[in-house]
Figure 1 (cartoon, rainbow, N blue to C red):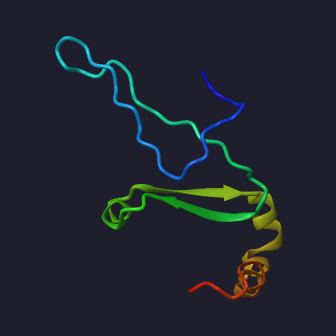
Figure 2 (cartoon, rainbow, N blue to C red; figure 1 turned 180 degrees about the vertical axis):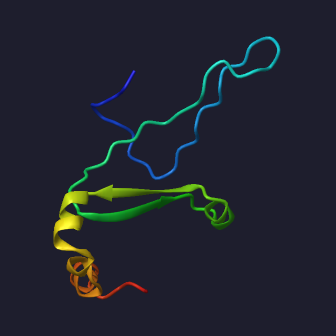
Figure 3 (cartoon, helix red, strand yellow; figure 1 turned 90 degrees about the vertical axis):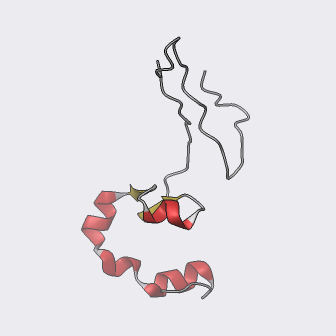
Amino acid sequence: ALRLNGPMQHDVFTVPECTTDAGGACTDLGYVVFRLNADNPGVWLMHCHIDWHFVLGLAMLFVEAEDVLRDEGLGAFSSNMLLSVCNGNFTL
């Protein structure tokens, strides 16, 4: 069941193994449900903490407020905005 009250708040989670039948074949899939506040327009990368996993494609992009990005253009999300949000602590 989906636990909406008091959800786990941690940055690492292991996907549960699938259930197997007598022959060892998966009968379902392990999965993790996560929820986030999507209130910051932009394209956000979520990736595994292990570099070679990232290189192999174990990453995904979240596009938040695609209409805002389309209407305002990428110029609205320039390095100047990063400077104000991150107090200048970032690399390009």
